[in-house]
Amino acid sequence: MPRYRLDLAVSLREIGILQYDAKRPEVGRDELDAARRHLEDLVSEFPAQPDYRAALDETLNLLEQLDHGL
View 1 (cartoon, rainbow, N blue to C red):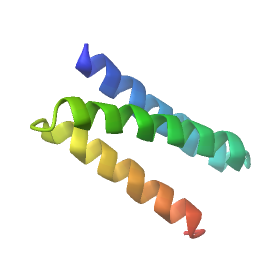
View 2: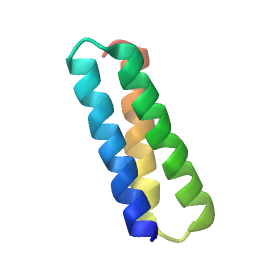
View 3: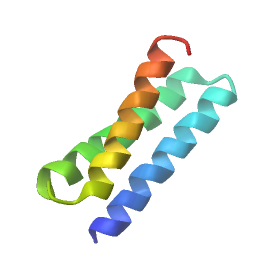
């Protein structure tokens, strides 16, 4: 089940990126925030799983870049 949740979060992140690329930043942000929330839950529940932390870090870095217009 946790692997499915990771796949869902990564898919949401990719949809968010596509929405930004399609000039729909509000929708993109919503998808990225949903991905972040899913990943934060996974990291909280499974702190010893490095894949979850890495996916969360990647998502947070992406959000920071988008917030700063990079």
